[in-house]
Image (cartoon, rainbow, N blue to C red):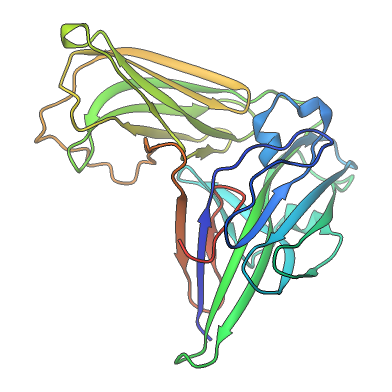
Length: 326
């Protein structure tokens, strides 16, 4: 049987400590959200979206998740944890592979049956063994449903899957995250759009998920432009670095400009300012493998489509909600 996975993501409002989240329900689809988090993490926006914690060996971590069905039909939803990793600026979870953290996470149930418009609350318990070694580990907790079109050649199975990221750092002390921004420059994307490019390195002991903005000031005739907001995140594990590119607008002149890029992960913010001039329009950025923080209109859906053959499905976790179609 061929497996076709279609996953979409919608930016949502955060939950609050020890209270039910007020995240909007998607118009149609399967949704999952984090309902609570420790009060001491109330200042960390990442903890409102993901399971993020530093804990000693032998610790038990409990979280409540809400699963919502707005597909139009009653659905049998499977819940499971699988392995995840951070590579090339992306938090990527494999739908079948296990790792240490995935095995430590135990949902209170493996399946729930939800009528249309209904929701269920489940609990996940993560037990860190007393023999666990130091280091950060990544996993995803999935809510998944599937349907098979028996009339299609080869019997196509459509999998609708949503997930919550888990970042668990095994350590005896809570080391703060940190990152640096360097080498801010003006470039052009392959489509010719003026682009600000910076090198970012994770210098802390835990992962960072970077979003932010860029501005241009002191341009020709004392003009300014921006901010150019980002709604895509770049994920970096400890020690990783990446070029981050933020496209501006096609109408931006070459300059010179004073460019400022500000990135944040949780409650940590870093900025970099440089005097830049965009190259001639014939110059293109040839590094197509560099992650891009794309400046988009707020409220636009983030859509990721992953197609996999039987035997495994890999998708990228961006947000907490999914729709059946992008």
